[in-house]
Image 1 (cartoon, rainbow, N blue to C red):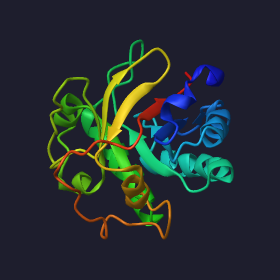
Image 2 (image 1 turned 90 degrees about the horizontal axis):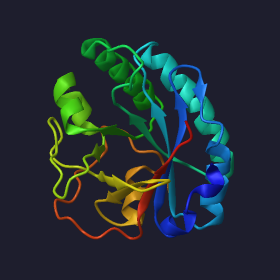
Image 3 (image 1 turned 135 degrees about the vertical axis):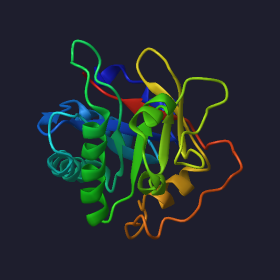
Image 4 (image 1 turned 90 degrees about the vertical axis):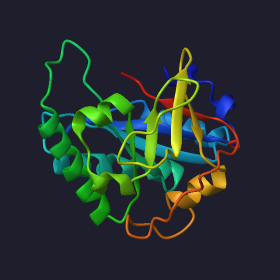
Length: 217
């Protein structure tokens, strides 16, 4: 439940809320999550979409942006991300090539909207999909619950690292400060595009605050 999320743990930090999934799915708790994040002083808030293989990537992106527009009435400008992972059983196995095409179509709509979109993915998933250099321009939100994360190709390094979970939220770290996270996603000014997205620092610095991912299934 949204009330169970320990928002005080990410006060001064950042959080990504699940907004949508597929071409029609909506996380009904996202509005309350967003309001609580704002109320507790979360310094950077994002929304993410759970990509599914059973519908077109462009349709999913447009569905996502409709929900983002609603949430931004509560939060102000949001950082955005797409969640790329296997659907758990009992869902049938999907074709990696079809799923990859959905991802590229989703990101094409995002790029045309002038928004920077992080890609949430695990190393094994990236290898299975055989992603090419086009995806490397997107910030990597790496899902790797190990002491030393491994960055998959075609990325050179991660920007957000999901390093573990607890009972109610996933724990994440940003490579830099919250102010730099806000700048990366254009939260304080004009939206960035993939063409103007500059290189990130190679040094790992302590994040200002902790990051969380919250969702309601």
